[in-house]
Amino acid sequence: NAGVTQTPKFQVLKTGQSMTLQCAQDMNHNSMYWYRQDPGMGLRLIYYSASEGTTDKGEVPNGYNVSRLNKREFSLRLESAAPSQTSVYFCASSENKGTSGQPQHFGDGTRLSIL
Amino acid sequence: AQSVTQPDIHITVSEGASLELRCNYSYGATPYLFWYVQSPGQGLQLLLKYFSGDTLVQGIKGFEAEFKRSQSSFNLRKPSVHWSDAAEYFCAVHASGGSYIPTFGRGTSLIVHP
Image 1: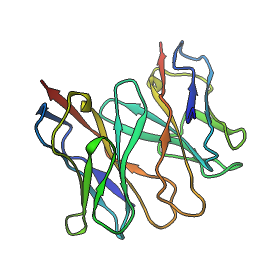
Image 2: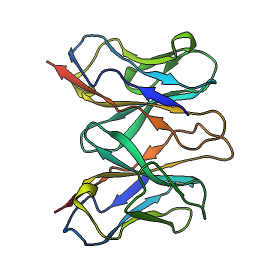
Image 3: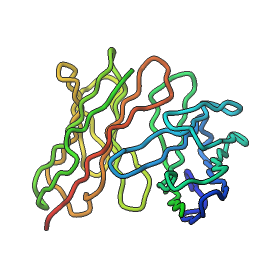
Image 4: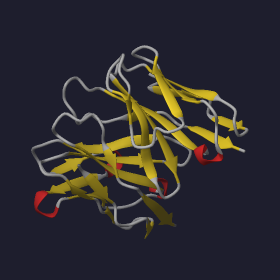
């Protein structure tokens, strides 16, 4: 099984450009998440989707939008990239059926640099 | 709201030595607790989890963790560290009341000397 697949793995953008980070999971999980990881900051939740058809803001949503395209796919869009969005982005999924506490499965990340 | 503290930003051990990584949480009820490991250039991988029952849980790669309610701790241990254990380790807590959002600690970087 591939698990959680993120594309692209690396990307360099210029300030003001837009791009979409793609994420797909093949585990039939209900919930999906986008995090950013910065040195010394740990993981910060950007957006999440508890189930297909729903999305909610996390801790740091400004400058981002998301789309839960179907149960498998959850994309993250930067409409106008800023240098402060230089980071490593992780997508994760988990099986949550009315109960909390299920572990998350992570992709290998997208390393994004904004010049 | 729950919170997680990993007091050590970096830990350095010699190969073959024992390891303990600390994790303290704040939550009003019994939480669900997790340890994840992140190798360089990769995503997080689940090492072990505690939901209920036996307070000593075994995980992959020879790791174990002990839940101590009185100390609000969930420390990760390994009796003999291998060079391949060098990585970033994250403790996480889920509220047991239906939240799908875990809270992560800021991580502890493990350095292994030969």
